[in-house]
Length: 243
Image (cartoon, rainbow, N blue to C red; front, side, top):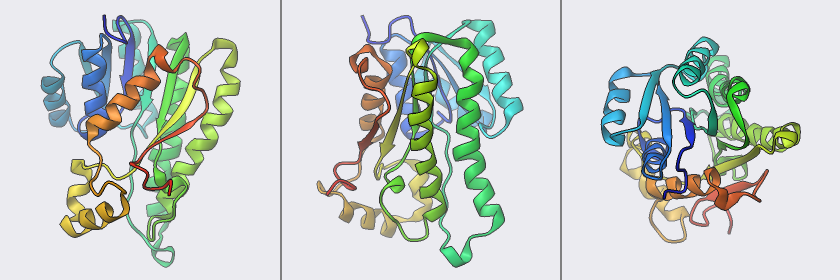
């Protein structure tokens, strides 16, 4: 029997990388998973990769109407949620003197506002004793030049987790933060090989993490293995921001 046998999970932005690897592992461990993404073609590819027990709902986590449509689908098909991985996020580089209103709004609208309403709108369907975890980043505690707005948006999620676990304690819903370090995903490809080489120099083992290494930690947070883990920021970074 899998660690998530019979559970219903929602994983946002699960069309590639860490979230897709997580959704696939959840299904392999017995869950039924709802995934989201902005591009239907990428969602269709993700469904093929996952293979079974998955429903894809096209939408943007920053859009409240799209979130409503997601949870209407979950309610209609399964009626409840046991696990939520609020994974959708966005980041781009801009130095302090280059930050524009559009850059700030685009980052905070998805990373902060989108995460808040992804969780809030899931609550009416959420099972007691469920698990919520948010997609953080080592940028919340480690300064990276030109990445200040992104880092601040991820630091806000740390505050959310601390507050929400208290607000949800009567329902025994756990809220944690999964904060990756440099992970070799398609999202890094536009940065080029020089940027990837630089990231590797920051990691004690000399190589970036793999999406599957995030997925196994997500499984831990989703399952009863982490039943006494609540309100933590769990860094999965190979030690990058810890030494």
